[in-house]
Image 1 (tube, rainbow over the protein chains, first blue to last red):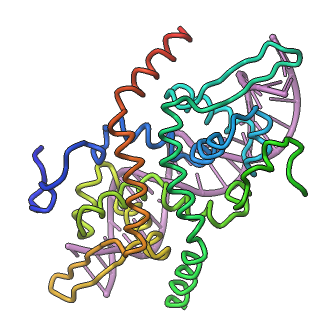
Image 2: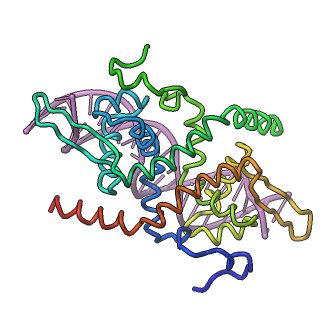
Image 3: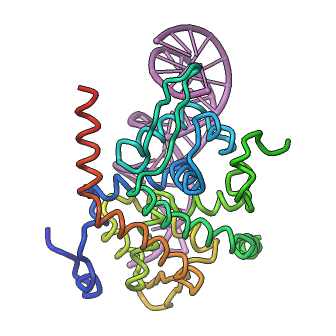
Length: 131
Length: 131
DNA sequence: CGGTATCCTAACCGATACTG
DNA sequence: CAGTATCGGTTAGGATACCG
């Protein structure tokens, strides 16, 4: 299957991010998952223990946090360090790779955070048009 | 409910991104949704019609595309322009606001795209450890 | 062309209970 | 403390059919 009729689409398309089988999209799903993005940004400020993360990220369940951390660890973004103390202490931190990623994620989240009032205003006026 | 015992957490926490009721998280969900991020990055290169987007973004259904576009429009990131031709032509583009956002999203996606091989290798070696 | 409406299932995900 | 296991509800989201 060749590319579309529209001449527009021949311009930039280098990668295949938009192809449904692209592995990049897979990774992106980990990174932009509900809790994944929050974990990345949070770990940018410090390493944290499991229970600290669970506490700091409001609304996350242990199950989802574990799942999220495991995915990010397998991708190579997060480092899991077990201290063989008693009781055990497990520390999560960013790898150098993960830090590069998280910085870009933070650029996104902090932009949103800084402009959230504007978005809420937009939503309100959009809702008004329907009513 | 005050903030945690851990002294670490008192350092940076300015916003409330990590609070479960934070509106920023809501916006983030729109932006990092499965199709939202792809739409934003795609519109960065050009404006597109509905059917073009549906074609370019592999695997998206009309329903989800419409839903995604509507959310991004209500947030003020995407502009929907109806040309009253026959047959009708609807063009989607980024607002100036949306462009700022999309640039940050693109920084993220292109970083992943450029390092996806590394992630796949990490995943493979993580899988090996289990077996 | 550019959607919406309806139906339906697959998965996500939270709650609870349990383990090393 | 740091998880895993299991269950069950909710919902995201795809397929199809239809409308302006």
